[in-house]
Image (cartoon, rainbow, N blue to C red; front, side, top):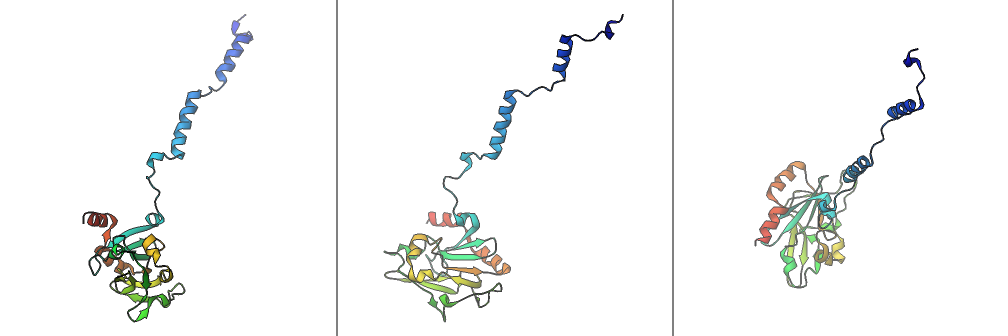
Length: 210
């Protein structure tokens, strides 16, 4: 009788079952995969900046107008992705060098009080159109006064009238709560203005070397 017709013994059956069972991955494989996944999901702390980025650095591109119209009259222009430009005093503005800093802000310049401008609606009704050299306000120190200008040609949407009662905001946070005004330039006007402004790197190089 042919042995191939004999039923398999228990050892043969056990070997066949072991061969058919899927091979389980080794523990080392799981460790490697977990490490790769962790590297993808969890950022390396060494990649973070030494100090967190400010809201200005995150949402705006910084430009500067050093010596605008007059020497020492340094101003900034923070450009948002939506086209709005925030105007203010750069930290190297000559007014900050006066003893006691800025003590008063007056928006009553030219032929109108800029603080009285009220823009409404999507069409920005009542917005006034100004040139880059148009005066926005006057900041005063204990012994001097300085004209702050638009720096960009466009529609004046608002001025920071809180500075009237709280001029000290300029001394403590001129780049944030102490901004002067918000202006919306036309795209073509912005391109012309941008060419005349300094980037943050150019401004730092200019003032750090002065």
